[in-house]
Image 1 (tube, one colour):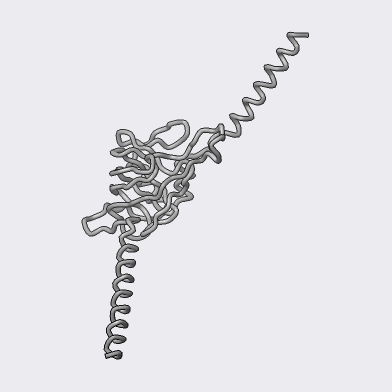
Image 2 (cartoon, helix red, strand yellow):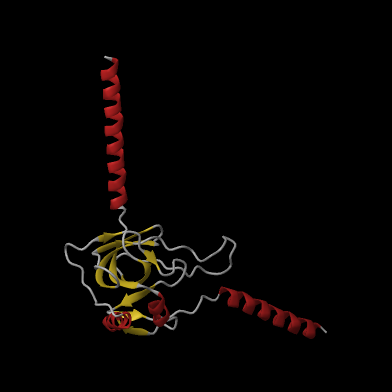
Length: 200
């Protein structure tokens, strides 16, 4: 009877463990899936990474996508894939180390660039000119992947020049805010001046 009870307990434990493991399993991903879903890629080196290494600033080496290649891209922060602090599942969202290179997959470009996925795999880690292209740690030459992406999306591979734009820096919004402030000061100052002159 004791053996039967122990056997049932072990089976139950294994089943519960399998359910937790299944619930925590990260969504399968591959280069092919990321390449198909994204509108652009950036191959670049991380110059700095803030917000616990989630928010990278990237020096662009190669760009494939609409428009002109940027030279620097300030990407938004990735988000934890854990739903609550009590969540038993590990966080599978990405972090980016300063000095390392990646191929980033984007769903939005320009002044407000966005990752293809902010809470899971959204970039390929580069190691010695090879990129890790799947959950199984398979590697393919970075240059080959970039050329393949360019061919499939019918876009040229671009290398940014000195006049290339900077994305996501927030400079435009700062300039706009400053312009609005100056305009406000001029209008208020002009109003006060005319009011004082009329009173005189």
